[in-house]
Image 1 (tube, rainbow, N blue to C red):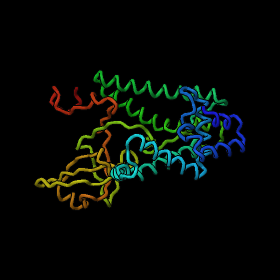
Image 2: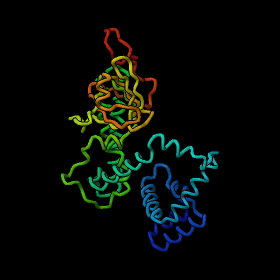
Image 3: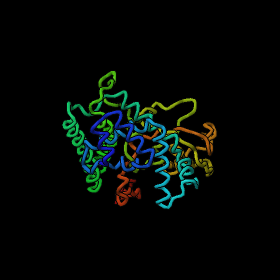
Image 4: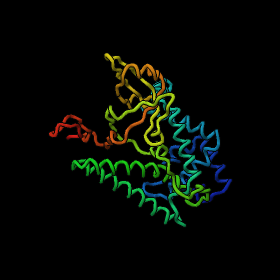
Length: 314
């Protein structure tokens, strides 16, 4: 930990903080240096580092300095921060709205739910932190192993379990940073129960849905399954093939998450299914297949298997 940061953390005095702010603004201490001040494996140092960072960034001048350092790092890496590429990519993926939503969900969860760490000291909370991380890592390893063995029902079960758990653990680092800070718990005293909120704040996986398992929500009759497997997005394309309309649907407007399904032309017209229009769909649970995204060699192949039906094959 750099000298200025170390003195401020240990002294915890206003004068020390003022001196550090002055050093940052004068360019004597880098924000990046501060963020990398804790050594690898030093959890206590990381907690103090992040607490200090939160305090510093309440000062707008520090945020402006941080922005300047980010631009300098981009230029150093050979990236032009003014060419608009980042803004276009964020806009293409609806990044601004989705990131704001993620921050809102995490804030709501952190403020409205009890901590996952219940230890009276930092050392006890750290052991709980490591145990929870290890638990989820073991379950993910189980899911991958079942998949490699061809046990797809168990692989699906453990994959869904891992998504649920990661949705909770996305807040775990913040719980460790605030281990000794009291906050109001949930009215029912339990951790987050919303599946959609946990999934949104959880990990990234690969998934596939059979066309027959995608159900369009009628505008005048919302699906009863909406709380469980409902997705909002945009109709990207409608292709008329005789009496049927082939629909391409982009989840949250992202081109990286297309769904394709068909419906009678008269149904598409009645529900005003047109390119560029917002829509909602429900995914039937039995039609959803989950895959470890980090293992592309395990991607599902839905060619007919030896029994003549459709199923995952390797």
